Each structure stands twice: as C-alpha cells, then as structure tokens.
Length: 393
Image 1 (cartoon, helix red, strand yellow):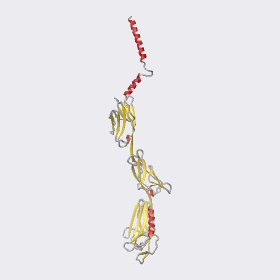
Image 2 (spheres, one colour):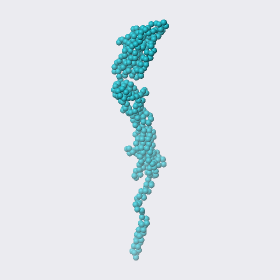
Image 3 (cartoon, rainbow, N blue to C red):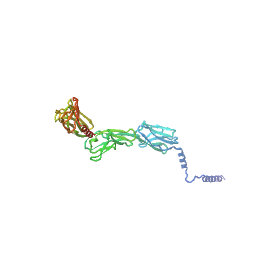
Image 4 (tube, rainbow, N blue to C red):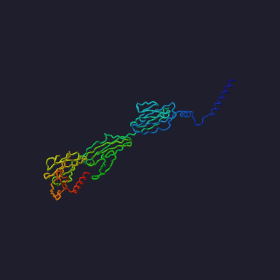
C-alpha cells in the first residue's frame, strides 16, 4: 500500500510540473541572457553628447568637454589619441606635463584643460570610461599659430650685377599656412619685367619668390617680405637688393659762356653703384679743391649723384675745358664741359649787355664784388633746368 501511495504522489508532481511549464513558457525568441544584458545596460554609464572640436590660438587655454551620464562606480580617463598617452585617471592627472589639468561637475561634465596651448598640443584626445567593454569618444584640438619668417630659408641682402637674373625668396611658418606679400620699402611700385623693353608696375607682389629677369638699376632698393595668416601679428623682413654697375655721367650743358666777374656753375649727373669717388679737373691738370676760387658740392639719392662746381668771380684765365670724373670698383666715367668768356660792355643805363653769343646758357650769378648783374636769358635757363629735372626723375 505504501508503495502505491508514493507512485501516486510522483505522478501528481509530474503532472503539476507539466502544467507550470505550459502556463509560464517564455515567448518564442526570448532568452534570459537578453533580459540580463538589458538590465545591465540600464546600469552602465553612457556619453551625453559628442565632444566638440576646439580651435584656439597658441598661448591661450584649450578646453575639451566630455559629458557622461550615470557614471556610478565607473571612472573617466583622458588619453591622447596619437600616441595613447594617458593624461588623467578620473580626478588625478598622471602626465608630467604641468600645463594639463582636469575638472568635473557632478560627475557628468569632465573637462580636459591645457594652458598655455603649444603648437605640439594640436591633435585628437579621447575621453574613456572603464566599462567591461571600454567606451570612448574623441575630440580634436586645432592650434592656430601666427606667422614666423624662417630666416634660414629666406634671402638675405643681395648684391647683383646689372643685367643678371636673381630671385628674392621668403619662407614663413605658421598655422594656417601664411600668405607672402612683397612691397618696396620706399613705397614705389615693384617693377616686373614683361619683355626686353617693357615692365609691369605693381604696388604688391604675391608669392614666396620674387623673380627679377635681366636686373635693371631702377629695381634696386629695399624690399619688404610680409607674412600673414589672419592670426596676429603679421611679420616682415627687410631685404636689400643692390644692383652693381659702372659709372655713367650725363652733362646737361657741355658748352657754357659767361661774362667776367660772375659766379659760374657747372653741373654733372652721375649714376653708379657701388658709391663713387667724384672730382673735377681743369685742362687735364690737377684735381680742383674747395677754396676761395672753387666751391664743390654733391648730393646723393640712391644710385644717383648731383655734382656741382661753382667758379667764383669768373675771369679770362678760367676759360678752358673742365671734366667731372666719377670712379668706382667697376669702372670710370668722365663728362666734359667747355667754358668761355662772353664779352660785355656798359650801356646808357650803366648795365652790362651781352656782346658775345651763348652756345648754352651760363648758370651763375654776378660776384658780390660787383654792383651790377650779368644778363642771362631766363628762357634758356628754364629749358636747361627742365631737362635736368626730367633726367633726374
């Protein structure tokens, strides 16, 4: 009887188990592992929004912000993406770079601060959460750098013979890449040769290389290489370009006549570089010197020189041939002027009157020892002065 009762009980239990299995059977495709994983996801932290990329000028403070939700027991780390250098672990900075710091607000907003920013800090950084499967997001820091001229790659002062070719080069570093603009220091336009006889004149020239083909003396001067990239300050370098050539002399008046007792002025215009030694001689004799009889003056403007010789109280013995001489390391040049006496006599008004003729006008004034002035044609003087000014320009 006892054996029969046990068998009945086992049968009832088996039937009850089958009933429970049928009533509480899970839906098709569902697993307890999925339910567990979903619960786990609800408890793990997540990123609130992507890290915003930052652009900052060198020397300022760069800040990358990582937003984390439901951090709980987990920790946040900052890592440099390029070389996987760990910068911080949660609130502790582990890098030896004292420009790096970490701050956070309510365990949600984690900020990586770099101050002052250097160009070497440019790159991407990762905010990581130490979950079982590491969570990470990336933000990038771009560092703007003002321009800096690279002296080792930039031309220095140059000295070139006229007619040769040369190039001025200017290189600059910076981020973004700097733009290079050329100007003349004196404000004159830059002359860029188009062909053998024609030039383009421009106020500025863009590009790192300024080319000169068959260099002309008028292109001599100081040039400014200006580098800019919209990150102040712009920088510049001064490059002096010297054009070497032998002296050339122009004489406005080669034949002059003057009455006695007047002061007579002789003129020569010189173009040369390097600078010249200039002097006057008479009748192929000795050099004339400053004194009571002669007053010698010269003025320089770039590669041009004005030469003047004033003969005080002209007399018959001062007639003859005069030479202005200019010499430098590349050559020598001479200009020739012939000076003769003009005969004058008194008129009824006790004024001097020209008796002889003038082949060219004499530029001078009556000596202070006389009471009356020599007559010189104002029209001829005006023409001569205009020609001289046109040459000088």
